Image 1: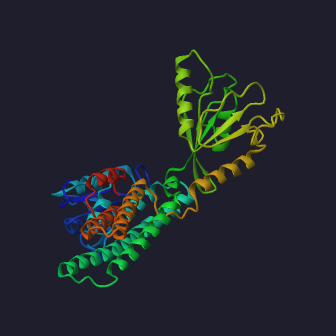
Image 2: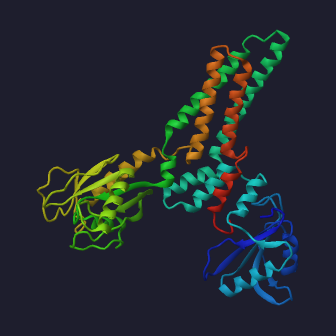
Length: 435
């Protein structure tokens, strides 16, 4: 991947559509626009042009926009072509673009990667953009938009600036100590600044919920065969996603459905009925069911009105849900009684699920949204604590300064100020082509 190439790609979805947006970025963008559109319009204005191929043949009538760098998304000269969305039209325009020298199709996430490398976005904002594209619920959208707008990046930069101020005071302390005259209160001022940072880090780390909101709450439906798991899954999903049959052991594998509960993301997983079996396929299904239940945030243990309900698997949180309430109301050992067939008890069950999700996600205003953020902040916190301990014990100032430098480096990882090349490869590969 050469960063000096001019790149192009459709930025809108694939398939037949009214409009297809094609992005071009790089130093050859202006020449390409002049050649295929017959001129360059005023910056950041859409104008109607006839696009022509290498031999002058007309390709399409399109709206074109010219966005000179560095005031563009990528920080480079950039062009947008708003062409008609027919497959043949798009193929013809892309073929024409590929005929220009040093102009090639973009790789996944390459436009955003260039925006990062050119200083248009910090790494936390890039992650916010990825999360915004992947957001499935309102709560996820709000959190991702907050990250894209730079909330975490701004906080990390403010912390880092405060750390660098403390480091400057420590360096001054070293200089004065060489002269034998350390100013009164210099180290106390360093300690005050570091203590404030330590308290800020502790508060943010205690918030939680941001990472969970990105991933969603995992709810596993478990129970004996014919307890009504697949019927309940269909009721929660509001469509037929699992086969419902009176024959025991119909469900053999895991079936996962993503639901939006009042804006909160919840993944509901149907599992094989838990029982002893001589069928090797069913035994594997039971093993998978138990393993998934142990990892789930919440297990709904479905209790049928007849027969034994067996022993629930180990779980972090478990709710006993009595099923087929319209048929039998004798169960009194359940948290909720429902009938997926009639809808009886479903509002109460949904309210319980919403409360569980709200408890897991917190206020939905968490600053940290990825495990990477949390680990970086924990390393910064640990370094600050060590520095404060050294100050209290009047340890070597050089060691204290080194711990403060480590804290600054850890915070720099959040915004991408330090070497994060391997992580960048993983992040940008998750983007779609054209983004």
